[in-house]
Image 1 (spheres, rainbow, N blue to C red):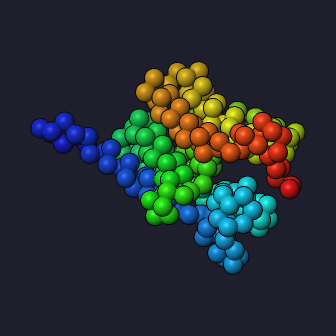
Image 2 (tube, rainbow, N blue to C red):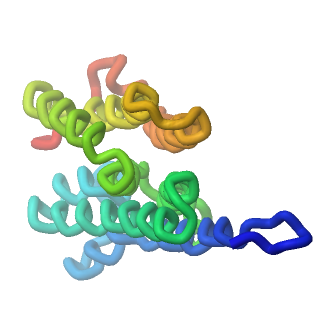
Length: 200
């Protein structure tokens, strides 16, 4: 939807609601249902892994589905409005919204589930392969962070191998980098062999 005379594509305004969608605090809302604050318990991260350790599998499943839904909805919205490029742009915006929500002083989660939800819409085959890799890594080592890092790093590689445009690959790389950067503490613990497993 170009704004003629100004050379502006109004479709890219969808980035704003995509970011706001990403800021929805799924884990915080689920925690409140249990009378708990996931930002103050366990790892302090408002995500599915911390919900698993703190509240159990059912709560973790709700958090996971909610966070994936944010990414899927943002990516789908962008794709419908302006094609794949806008879909990936909205996916990136939703991940940033989850990781750095303006509504909570930029203190959000790690963005993995939101990124996965977006990838299931835009790169379903790649995400299916990476999902199997994640499951194997977690089953063998019990460490969700290691599998999450593989997914974040693997998405731009998968996008490139499946013939996506350089611009799209770059946006997947940017989204993956946001997630990997948010895992910097986990990376340090993995190197030291101190990263807790899901059962801890």
